[in-house]
Length: 102
Image (cartoon, rainbow, N blue to C red; front, side):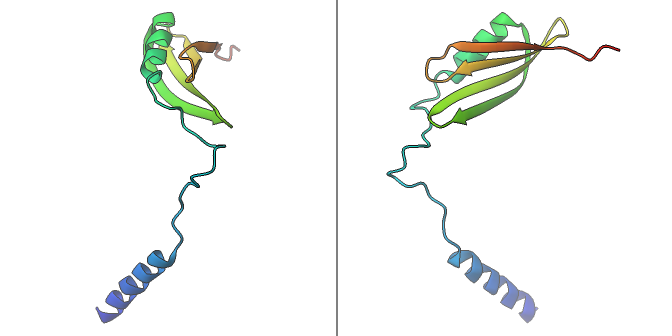
């Protein structure tokens, strides 16, 4: 029991000594969009174009640009990937996924 306490105490000391990861206030290469107000309108527009169920929503980024990628399972059985620009709220790309046919 004493060895368990010593182990936990040592573990707590180790965790306390680890550096805390924090963003540099002067680092402007990685910024989130000023707000996320376009995520919901993008999702609604994508579902208007391809009625169905949104399976997955991913926020993608490259340098200072952010997009939302939606995976949609349409009611007609087709699957769609829709890309929306978070800076403007506009749909900038869509792709229908095609099943392998033998």
